[in-house]
Image (cartoon, rainbow over all chains, first blue to last red; front, side, top):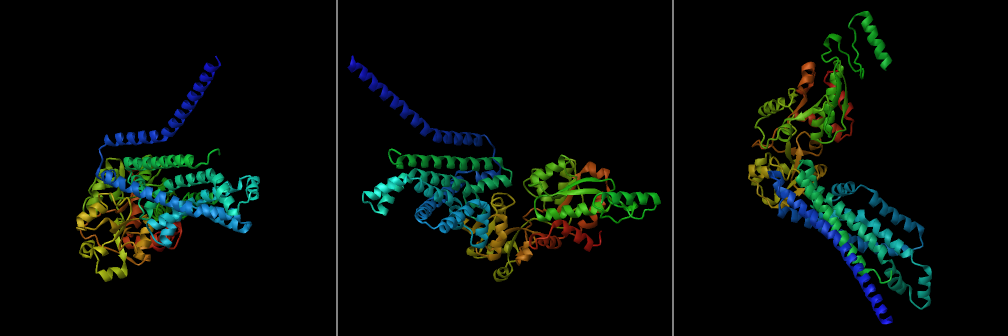
Length: 261
Length: 312
């Protein structure tokens, strides 16, 4: 009797875990499914249209692949640069006791974020140079703040007693940072990185103004020449990239999140 | 102001001598009553969203008001198509349009008519079917053009678009707008017409505002796509290359309005004719530079110019 009831309990638990996993997989699959169906619908709609010569120059595979590649390149390289620059800055700032230094860096990062992105890009192009590097710098300036702020918040929210006990067990300050603080702060830092990635996808559309390509070319083109299919294709592609990148980031976040946090 | 105007009008009426007519709106007028060509005309003069259009709108409104009308200016609408719609829906009394724009954008043609006069007549006729009238145009042609810095032009020995194809490929570099890169009357057509054959790397896609500075610096390109009447051309010491094969459509500016408005107030054509023929490319470039380079207010630029020309 007891044996059979225990078996039932186990099988119920297994079933619950199974549905739980199925739900998680479903949630995981939702974003790619939405993106694929949106792109499919777009393709279907485009295939019913008769394109004029202006539209044909942009709505072809070669052009779209080139612009999408440029867009992804800008977004990903800028995000890596932001991670490499903003996370160490955030760690340094959270170590310092100088209010002035913290205020200055946070203020600067805030300015970068608050300035209209088009302004930053065009100003840099006029004062410095046009092209890829300028667009990259503008993107980094623009998406620096979320990562910086999240790194600082992530480190500050850790219970001081945890740090203290680690020190008490004989760890050095560096060991505490590497083995206790950073792993605990990872979820918050990654959330900041995710925000800045999605920012980058949107802001990279203005790279078109300074000869750095990207899908902004299609959007501006479609807008100025009133070619609706070109405009819609550009916009749907940018939105799809933003969704997919956010999705990839969420998967990475799950993998990197320390167990039990 | 209104009280004073009213009392002045009353005084003039009482003395029954046409001493000084006063416009109801701004009080800028000084023409005798029998010369009030457009008295009773009210409404809004529209414009597109760049300096040349602001200046043209203010010129027209101020001179019409001097001849008895009561018009104001709205420079808030963005985009050619929206301005045209505002005219069609009677939100605007009229605005300055370009022949090429109407021919290609509103009337759905793909190839321009060769020659300024022929293009104007064709556009006028096409728009007559839409109930829109074109008053005789100004000589200015705000078409696409390619500009190069003056010293480089001399060094390379180029003065027309035909000269470009003969240059070494590394000198054949262009700054253009993304829009220009796909239109038939833009880059794809230009390279065909002039036999230019360059790799993609020679073409930089930039925003209009950046093109002028990039062309002046010469780092991105030798040849920048500009608008022929832009004030920055002279200010940055750029020279415009001659379109010797007449590839670009003519974008001659003319005042457009509803035919019914013109029928009701034929004086509008007379008033516009008083200043339209003085607006050449060079004169318009000078006026545009006052706005874009010196930062003056288009309304003041218009008033000063009308005054200078002895029109008000």
